[in-house]
Image (tube, rainbow, N blue to C red; front, side):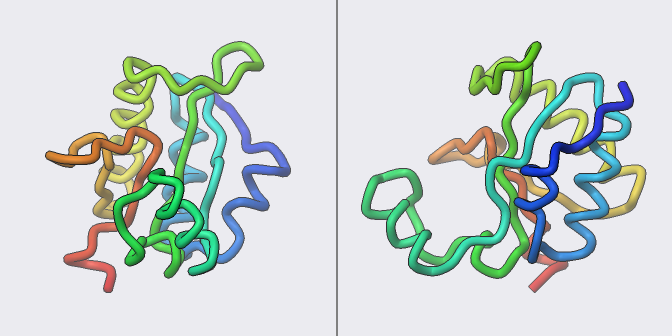
Length: 127
């Protein structure tokens, strides 16, 4: 425990909602697994590019409004995308959300297009 974000991860948090930023800072502080923020706020142009490449199924992403981030676990010095690691990471982010009272939604819990890296502020609370 006691991980810290790199300069790159901090830069990738620029423009995200203050509650999401607070949540990410709490999550990295208490997490048993290191992780990076691979993407935060996106432009519509970037979203269209991802949509065209099949990396997303929507043009109405919470990334555009700064209500979502994509995370990746780090093992050693290697960024990993293994699903078992995402389950551990999701539990840590959800624990931080519970501590702060910030409702979070994990893309890995979605019924279709499971998105392990994706975490967003709950749409029912954050418009």
